[in-house]
Length: 354
Length: 90
Image (cartoon, rainbow over all chains, first blue to last red; front, side):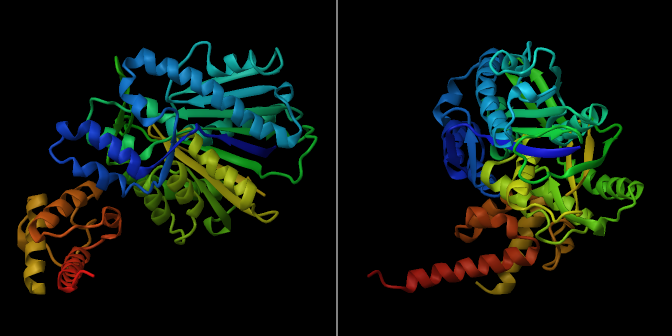
């Protein structure tokens, strides 16, 4: 099976980090002991720009879970259509060629789910299999590729679509000056990504060059770490839970997990040509790099994605994957590891061969 | 200000922020060794600015890894401020 293409989409409102910091400072300075913290913290998040689903002055007018979630549904459908077109069109495929759709998001909920609403708008087959995934958070990009790969392994002449839409700005809490919410407002952005994953016997009309093959995947759950990351869900929507221990969990586990995973596939860490990692934030990327003993520039594309669009939760690692596919393809036969971690706490590793 | 005095005052600010004795902080220690995270560093930077009457660039905090980096940064910013003051406006 292979990853044939990735398409991304971003909302129209692009802001510099300083513009967002200034807007938030104007909003919060009366409620903070040290309002200078916002600007300085934002300047050190590793983020230069972000795309937001609404202009900055609209956010204070959004009230409560219902209003923000309705906004999420509308915008998610719009962005998803663009991301899907960007993934399918270059391959000469349409939605009618998709046998299974996996939809991942953690920033809003809907029933019928976003994938169902898209089936009413695009020519997906009537018998398309739907797997909406909520709650995996940042790990869902990598886990979604793994689950879609499992599917086309079972049905090798079929094509699966992984779709992730994350509108993190709709989860920012206007009444919460906690450090966790400050990190959320400083780090996370909005965006969508769609990935075409084709079985080994699937027919793709306009495939200019083969994509990386999914060789193996590994899910790992870290017991008794459920307070490290997640949501507290209340009347005002999703309030982030984010422990400073996230980098420690990475440092404690990632090297062992990666080593065992690669040994099981008779590959050494030194055999990996590129690392396609979720752009979680500076601390997480630094922890990933140091614990695996990677050279300084090994995660350059993850840092670039973080700078340009912020942390997009599940969609982040898919944006990094798109950059690899479009501009930094591996030489034939070389290996890559695609990886993300998320609430659970848990990780997903995907071994790719170009 | 003498470099030794700058160092002493920086160490005092860092020790106070972490509620640890001043003599347990040395110039060559890293912030990781002192369990100082990025948020601690930002709060320390405000104290440093107020104490030395300097303006630390917002985006420079991430590059500070050791106590010595802060001391060197303060001396450099004080020097820059002195040069600006001594340069006549054109």
